[in-house]
Length: 370
Image (cartoon, rainbow, N blue to C red; front, side, top):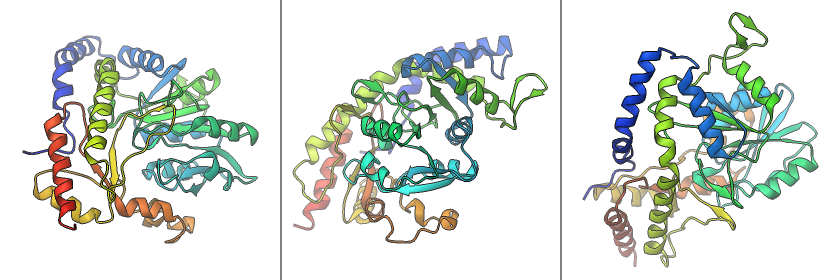
């Protein structure tokens, strides 16, 4: 049996006819830039996210940059970010001229918390970027209370958690302005790069719209220095076809995650995911930790089971971030996670038999050392 890390075949088969109809309509209209397909998706995704406004953006990194700039964050400001995250979260802060201040995640949930954040707040702190990593919501009540107490902005990085719930509320609806990515392998994935911003603030909506469209809301009239960061109409059409299936696909991911946990529970050398109270995880990734991670990954590969490491090199040790002045040992929890984590296959369409096969082989690997 072969088990790929991810397969989009089942999802794309279910939307093929509807998407081809959308493409035909798009070709007839020829509104390829900020046309009907983009406006329709923005309304649909805003409704799904339980916010009044959504702005389609070219990708997740641009969505973060525009969110920061819409809030007026720049040179001289500090923004608190997780030490354990995809590096684009940190790049966005640097690209607007601000300083990213890294904080440790909770090692059980992989997310930053009010406790870890508060220690890093200074007089220059202007915002917090909580990342709902792997599909697990951050504990937003504590973060929101902390932000209010210190007059800080919140920008959620919701790139891995579309549809996740915290206390019955969708992620991407808690912050002042929030960014997401629709990279193809995300829970809601496009055919290429794509992203979005969500907000409840009409003024931030207007600023973000200006920034994504070369600083313009009227042709050849430019109010600010902006970006060419628009969501392509064809990507918007594709995302509109997939969005109605997202809740069911997330439910399927949770079911398969529960199967993994049931099968692997009781093996003390395997650290399984932990979901916080009153949260609904959407398992963009199913991540375990193991002291012999590299050997386990090699063993699974020999059994034709694909797995990935998210992320093998901690952000603070990446050459691109040397200017921040961090060194090995500064973030021990992050380094522990990066040295031991392994992402197992999980996606809409993975079968019970495939999940069981992965688990059987992990347990077989374990037995070699008993």
